[in-house]
Length: 253
Image (cartoon, rainbow, N blue to C red; front, side, top):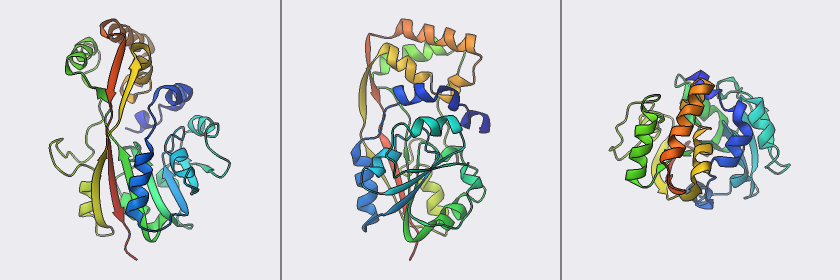
C-alpha cells in the first residue's frame, strides 16, 4: 500500500484539477459535533489541500502534513498563508503540540494501523475531536458504470480501496468508525453522510481516473490503453456519485 500512497505526487496538478472538492457541509458537520470553538487543527495526508481550505475558511489555524513534497507544493498554491505545511508521514510526526481537531480526508487508509489511535490521541488536546471523511466515487448511472467496468476488466479488476479492517459494505458502521468503537481512547463515535453529486464531461472523468492509485500503478502504455477504452464507452457527460462518509470521535477531557 505504501507505493500506492506515494504515487500521487507525480500527478499533483492533475489531482487538483480533477478531484472533486468537499462541500461546506463537511466542515459544518465536524464543527457542530465539536460543540466548542476549534482554534487549531492538524491534517493527516493533506494532498493538494482540498480539505485544508475548507477548515482554514473557518479561521482555524491548520497544520497540513503530507509525505509528498509535490503535493504540498500544489497545496500552497490554494490555501491561505495561515496554513502551516509539514512534509512528513503521519507515523513520523512527533508528539508535542496538541490540537483541537485532528482530521484526515480520504487519507487515513494510507496510515499504519499499528499504534494509529495512540498517535492520534497524543496529538489531540483533552476533549479534542478526531474526524475522518471520504468515500468511493463512482458513476451514478449503473448502466454506464457497468460498461466502464467491462472496458477496464482486461487490465484491472477493481479501482476501489478495500475496507482496511474488512468491514462489509452493508454494515451500518463503516471503517474507521469500527476501529474507533473498539479503541479505548475515544468516546462518542458517530457516522454521518454528506451527499455529493458532480456532473462532468467524459474527458474530465477520465482525468479523475488518472489520479486514482489503482491506475497509477499500471505501466503508462497500459494505463493509456485503459483510459482510451473507457473514454470510448462513455456518454459526453456523466454524473458522479461521491457521498462523503464522516466519522467522528472525541478524546475524553
